[in-house]
Length: 301
Image (tube, rainbow, N blue to C red; front, side, top):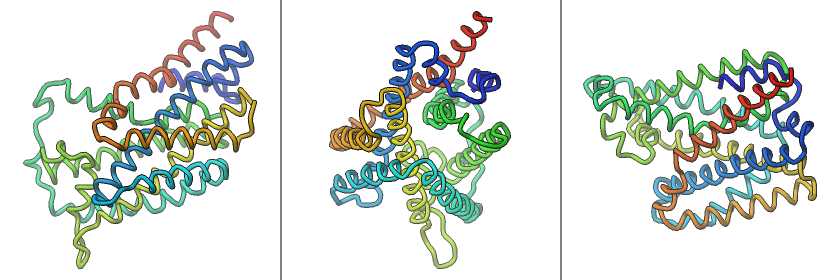
């Protein structure tokens, strides 16, 4: 995030695409397409993961293809309502997610067994590095910040630091409980945090995974809706041949076709949802492009 941080320290009013487009319209269109492909890829993998989750956990014996289509249509509608509507939905999601996760963790305290923890670097350094790299690649929010930060009012640096450290703390707690409660069994699960939630119980409530399922699905809808909105926004701004609603329709249609193809086999999902591709995309958008722009700006001076 350092190249992006220093870039916006010097350019607070315009995002990367706006600055590049002022210098070269062709280069601006090229970079905008990179961002569109980047956000589209994460949209497809987010919907595909939601579809896989619904098909294997929520409705294991039901064909969920119709739910997939409905999910994409709902995300496109959220994108059509605009950034403000998505922002309000995010606030509602946060109000539900944070207490739910805290409640689940508190109920798991009595199941924590520190003997389930293996010594650090027990299997070498590479598994730790691979986990960290995979985590960075999964975090598309870094790329969203690269495009949307100038539209944030107030002390956005303070807000960013609060978000970043809150995310780190929350993920550390979730991994801690997953590892200490389930041990090596957690690494065999496709959705380890859902499995962890299914072990939580409180009084008459023997399984709390329904809470986790509900809030996770809501978050997936908001995330996919925001990614679709960003694609439509970029295409409308830098290509402008069609209306935003037409771009939304095209993006939704292509997303449905792509996910219907992926949903036929779990192996396809494992190939498409590739951590290496995600890391490369994120590295280009968040680090390489801002770094090159800082370099060329310095050359101009």
